[in-house]
Every structure is written in C-alpha cells, then in structure tokens.
Length: 202
Image (cartoon, rainbow, N blue to C red):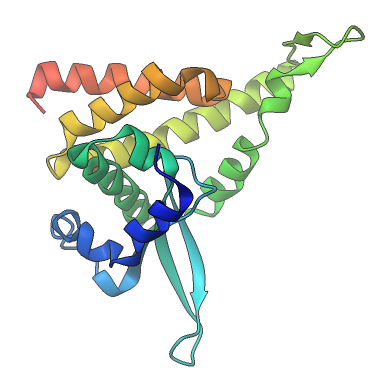
C-alpha cells in the first residue's frame, strides 16, 4: 500500500484533471460546482460539502473525497466508476429534497449500536425491539434507494462493469471491515448489477 505522503503527492496535481473524462460524461454538472480531493479518513470515496469563501462571498460547494482504499483496491477503470457513482449522489442531491435523506443517513452511521450490544458477559448479541426493526428497515430501504440511484447514474454513463468489479473487490478483500448494514447493501447492489449485466449487457 502506498504511504500517506505518496497519496498527497498523487493529489497535488489537479484531481479534477485526473477525472475530467468522467466529468465529461455528466454534462448536467457544471465543473465549477464540484471538486475532487483526497481525505485520509475516507476509506473509499464519499461526497461532502463545504463553504467556499475564496472569492469573498460564501458559496456552498460539493467535493468528492477519495481515500486510501480507493488507490489500494481499484484499477483505473474502477476508480472512474467510483467517481461516477459519487457524482450520481451529487445529481440526486441537486434533483431531490434530500433533508429527510440526510437525517436518516446520519442515523445510519450510528446503526451499529442496533446490531452490536454486549450482554453481562461482554458477548456481542443482536436484539431488536419491534420499533427498532421498523426503523432499521426504513433506513435500510432509503439507504439502498440512495445507493441504487448513484449506481444507476454510473451505469448510464457507461461504468456498469467497472462499478460491479469495484463492489466485488470490496466484498472480497474488505467484507469483514464493513458494518452489517453496509454488508447487506453491498451484496444487494452486486446482485442487482449482475442481473443488469446479464439482461442489458452493461
């Protein structure tokens, strides 16, 4: 695996230039609206936002952040597919009222407490109340919808095979690192993309 310093060297060049070919497949995205950068605390990739005050006024900008496993796991085509997936999330945010989505996805980040509870002997047990079961399903369904939308955007831009390959690598090499909710979502997305590959030749 490359060192943190080499990651910084990689990202010194314009990340947007590195993935301009991906951005060109999203003509509905103005390149000034979004940045691409490196974040050591992000395992694979995510999309975030920040307040840009460089020109005086405060402007909300979005940024695709890529992390160590992005470089460790994926080949060039898979990296482009992952960027395309994150740009799909950006399109979703632009075209939908994402306030409920954001609230539930924040809650999703805390869901391991639903899965991992310790009994008096400090053993990990899984217990749900009926209310928790309903809440977990609601969040899982929304999370899956959110991820599937982004997968669809990657497929539409011609990255279906590469996106499938990237997800399969995550499962093969990092499955034990994923939380339970992510495991369920990734497996479902792989099966869905495989079905699309068979049916549509993605």
